[in-house]
Length: 68
Image (tube, rainbow, N blue to C red; front, side, top):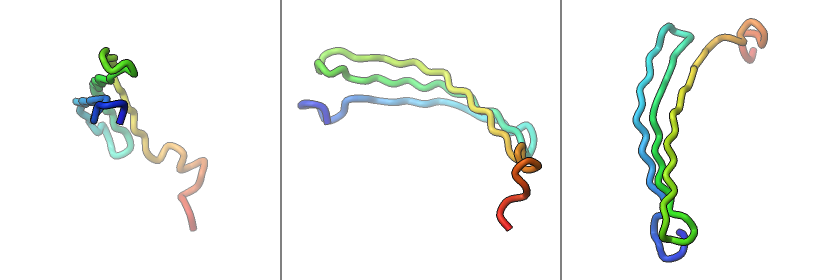
């Protein structure tokens, strides 16, 4: 808690993802954060675009097939 406020921030995330193959997927989303500043009167608003690339088995040849 910050001062006399029970909550000092709110967050919202909206996104979607798509698998293009068994080893590759892409996710994209919008993240909004409202955060009360330390003075307790002003809001800081953050707009974030998040992009995630998920790749599986890329290092399998380098690292081996995993633990024996």
